[in-house]
Amino acid sequence: MSSPIYLLKTRRFAPLFGTQFLGAFNDNLFKNTLTVILTFQAAEWTSLSSALLAPLIGAIFILPFFLFSGLAGELSDKYDKARLSRIVKVWEIFLMVIATVGFATHSFTTLLIVVFGMGMHSTLFGPIKYSIIPQHMGENELISANALVESGTFGAILLGTLMGGIVSGIPNGGVIAGIAAIGVALIGYAFSRYIPSAPSLSPQMPFSLNLFTQTFNTLRLAYQNKIVFLTILAISWFWLYGALLLSQFPSFVQTVLMGDETTVTILLSLFTVGIGAGSILCERLSHHSIRPSLVVIGAIGMGLSGIDFALTAQHFTAVGEINANPQFFHILFDLMLIGVFGGLYSVPLYALMQRRSEAHSRSRIIAANNILNALFMVSGAVVTMILLEGGWDIPDILLMIAIATLFVAGVIIVKLKQKKG
Image (cartoon, helix red, strand yellow):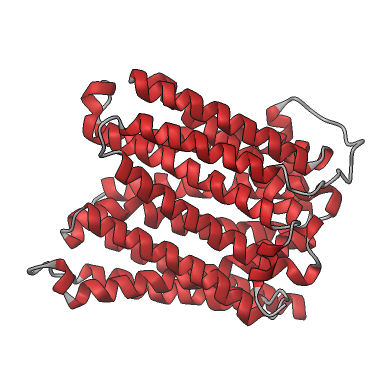
């Protein structure tokens, strides 16, 4: 039990890890291939401006989290999660076939439908992934399993994004990406066949087809457990911060660092590697137990390194080659620290959410987490756009979110003291 890697040798975890890793890879391979192709070849595909395409794709992908998370939670609580995971993977294979056709025919509408479908794929699989972990793992394995899932997910995001960027520059790159994604989805389905059965703990639960009722009931269920609800809010802040950083990398590189596409890739890679490293470090420091102190350290670390990152960016001077600029390496170091502290912060929160949720309603709790994660990310994006329109610079916005993260750390400390009292 000295290393979480041993879980990758067990049937109760390895197939689930492979299934979720390949699914996250495909999501980002498809989305980034589509985004890059449309950005540089927009006139051949649509009359919309290239500036609107990336936000449009992101909005369509995240919409199913609002519409179907309640449904996903109810399904995962009512039916065998292993069986549901295989159905979701069949859905992914079908979507990647449609995507290949869309790329081959240059059908913009078809590809947007696939974006929506892949968002629904992620919406459905999220509650399965996080609720099956405590069903198959021991309580002392929750941190290890979540650390591997977190680091694996961000690793898959990085690899899929990089692969999408590479393939999109090749002639017929969309078709090549589609064919590759079909192969990856088939392998993912093969992994899902080996996930051990995870029977429903509430098979008699009533089932509603009203999406709005499902969403309301899911959020109300989470709100009834105050510790779980506060945990979800804390997780949602992590996704708001991360999404804001990732969405601003291209503009930040272009307007502040005066870099190019390679510079964006470097920032993305270091941030992702940092989160993976922080997730594994959290597992090592926690000694297989949930330690709220690591959440506090993570929040303070994200805030302080984020402040230093923003202040360095505010005073950045683009002189000569960027790779020879000491300020650039200062920024890279801060960015990696944000990722490392983000891993320390998020892993215990996911484990706490799983542990404190009632087993028979755990999937719906995780669905509520997905809804609020999406709400926070969209709200952050809207506020960012308003501030940019109002004359704020990107470093100013990054400084604001870093300072706000210190405030979040303060709230967590107060809540922990109230609990002890």
